[in-house]
Image (cartoon, rainbow, N blue to C red; front, side, top):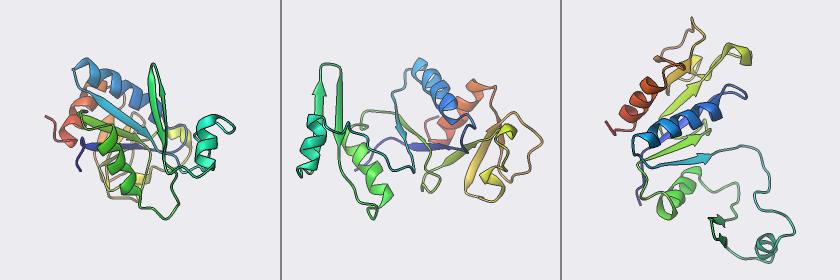
Length: 171
């Protein structure tokens, strides 16, 4: 199975990850690219609505539960914590993202794909890139910042899009 190139946008809480991902999606789709996204969270919470039919199907033991409506398709696949994280991305590739040019993942600091960190001084902690040499770049306008990777300007969305496309091998 293969899917689109995957880039992770990581950062501490309130660093601006969601805003950056939304800006990137808008700019990339304006260029005619199909962009898929995944929001990764380390919090354990119910994605389905307890008490609804789909939730009841899962609780009864269904291995997978899908929901089809006129405007949306969703699938719930229960997992245990021991399942490898990369299997989840392969599933997305196989099911939904094959016709997309790029997959942007918000979060997942442990990913084995390129990770770009969003950092702002207001978060009050050092960027992860200060101690994690596998982070490929930091997006910030708060300088100086002492990291071993390149700093990309948050205010230059066109430049960020260009760099993301290069990183993904799409330019």
